[in-house]
Each structure stands twice: as C-alpha cells, then as structure tokens.
Image 1 (cartoon, one colour):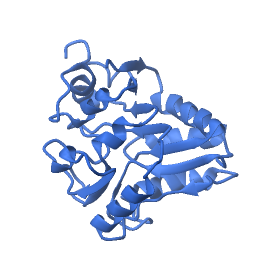
Image 2 (cartoon, helix red, strand yellow):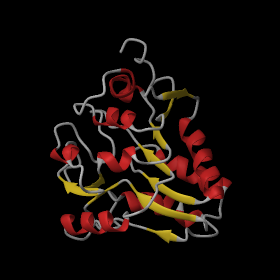
Image 3 (cartoon, one colour):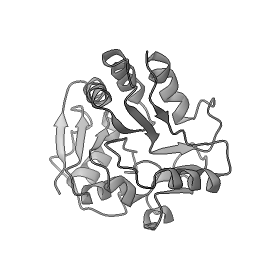
Amino acid sequence: MQPEIRIVHDPQTTVGELLAEQAKRGGSIVLTGGSGVARAYTRAAERTPDWGRVTLWWGDERCVPPDDELSNYRLAKESLLDRLEVQPRAVHRIRGEAPPAEAAGELDAALAGIELDFLLLGLGPDGHMASLFPGSPQLDVTDRRAVDGPPGLEPFVHRVTLTVPTIQSAVRIVFLTSGESKADAVARAFGGDVTPEVPASLARLAPVPVEVFLDEAAASKMETS
C-alpha cells in the first residue's frame, strides 16, 4: 500500500496535535523515542492535558534504567507525562532495567489481545523503525509480539522492540521524521521497494496506509528515489 506523505512546516507540532486528538478519543497509544519527538509530546500535553482514557505503550526501549538519559520512557515522562493533569489509565513501561529477554517476554505477554489504536514511529538514518535494524534477525520473528536484540547503530545498548507483525497490526501507523539527514532514509523507506534491507518499508505491508509526516528537508529526495 502506498504511504500517505504529508509534508508540513513543523511535523513535530502536527503530530503532537494528532496525539492530542487520539488522547481525547482514548484507546491504546504507542510512543517512540528519537530526536525531535519530545516537542510533539509537549504539544500533545498542552492540547490535551487529560489522558485518563489512554493506555500507553512504547514501540521499543533501550535496556537501561528508566531514569537513564538514553531511556525512551524518561523522554516521554519528562516531555509528556510530567505535564499532564490526568495520567493515562495504564502505563506499560518496558522494563529496560530487567534482563532483556525477560523484559521482552513481559511486553509480549502484556500485548496479548491488545489492539494498538495509534502507533508512532521514528525513522533511523539507516531505515530502521522501532529497534528493528537492517540485517537484524529480529526482523524474521513472526510468532511473538515483542523481542529483544542488539542494536544496529549507536548507542550500542541492547534493545526490546515490537516485532514487524505487531507494528503492521496497528489501527493507525504514523511516522515522524525531519531534517536533511533523514532524506535518504525517507526516500528508501517510503519511495523505494519494500525490503527488509530498509525495515521501515515493511510497515507499508500493513492493511492500513502508513502516514508519514515530514518537513521539506526530510522529503527532499523523494522525487529522485
């Protein structure tokens, strides 16, 4: 399925608005880490300070304690959760401080029977999504909802991540990326072939169109892909 490319002046603010709208509706929201996403979370908290109808998840996590500067949970806590008037009804933090296989098993079990209403993803410069990197054996896992594995880029910290089928099963899949440094990855992931060599392209096999929010710099190589 062809992705829906949305080129906007400020994709972080735009996605923050989408998160705020979903928070009003309630349901399951899956957050991401990565550069620039904190501003989207802050915007979402400003627009909808009541997340009492939301069940919160993460698409991946580095295997570090929750107060570590590398933690995706810490990023969301500081930019979103600490700014809310009403906390989510449930927060399913990936326990990065636990043994990786144990943390992945906990997430896999917790996701049983869960429908993910809004899944937010970033895009790595190598085309990775969540912590699914090019060449990673985790890309081939189809019998689990979450798995652990080593990283493909710095920082070289073990990860827990949703699997490809779990990502593809989400009701709504939204990518947020910006900047010229991501332009090649954007062109390959959303304008090129669907291939495990560009893991983010595999999201396009979902039964719903992938929504991609970019600034002009990140979209600059789409035409020549």
